[in-house]
Image (cartoon, rainbow, N blue to C red; front, top):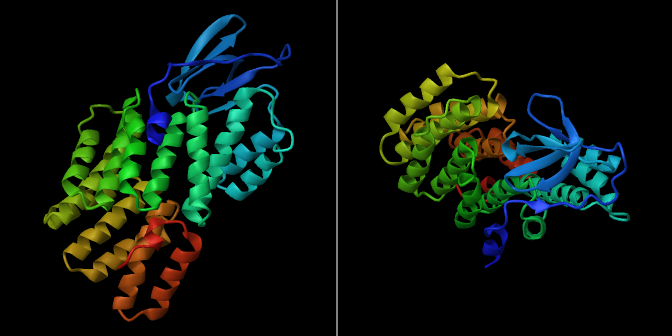
Length: 347
C-alpha cells in the first residue's frame, strides 16, 4: 500500500505559487553544458520543469537538468549541494540542519532541503553504516509529500539502491521500476540495468539476463546509452558464467577491457569484478584474485564495486595463506563500507 502511495499515477505537473518573489530575483536551471537559464519556475513535475522568462515559457525535460537553484534560497543549501557533489555527506547534513530553526518559506526551496537531507542520510547509511531505517523513512516521506518533484527518478533509484544494500531484492526491483519506465531511453536503460543487477544478486539469472538484454536491444547511440550497454554486457557475462558459460563470459569481458577507456572507473571496476567471478567459476583463484585486485588498487572509486572486490579478496587471500592481507581487506570492508550488503554476506 505504501509503495502504491509513493509511485501512484498523479498529474503531470504541480503548479507552484510565486508568493514572496521580489522583482529581479530569478530561478536558474542548469543543463549539462550550456549556461544556466534564468526565470521563474511556474510548473514542476517529475518529467519536466517549466520556466517563465519574462512572459515566455520554456519546458525543461528533467533528464536534461543537472541542478536548479532558486531565487531567495539560503546559502547553506548551495553549500550543501556542493558538499554532496564532493561526496561529503556529513558536511552537507551539517549545512542543511542549520536551516531547521528557520525553514525556507518558499515551498520549492523547502523541497530541495528535504530531498538533500534524505539523500545524505541514504548515502551515509549505504556506506559508513548510518541508520537505514531513518534514511528509508526520510525518502518515503519525501516521495509521498512531493511526488512531482523533479528529483523523483533520482529518489526512486536511491530507494532501490537502499533496498539492494539491505539485501531486499524484491523491494529494490520495485523501486527501480519507475526509472525503467521513465520517458527517456537512457533512464530506461539505467533502470533495467539496476533491476538486472538486483536479480543477479538474488541468483535469478534468467530474469536478470532478460533485463540486460532489454538494454542491449536499444538502438540509442548516445554516450550514456553506450555506457549502459557496456554495463549490461558485464551483467550478461556474469549471468553466462553462473549458468555454465564462463569461457564465453571471460572472452566478452576481456573485449570490454580492451575496447574501453580505463578512465571509466565504474565500468572497469564492475568488469574486473565480473572477470574475477568468472575465474572462480573456472577454478582459477589466482586469476580471480588479480582481477579483484584491479578494482581494489585502480578502480575503487565506485563504492559498491569496491566493497564487492574486498569481499572476495578477504576470502581469496585467506585461501592462499596470506592472513594479514585477508584481514586487511576484511577490515577495510567493515570500516569503509559498513552499510554495504557485501559486509553481511558469507563467503
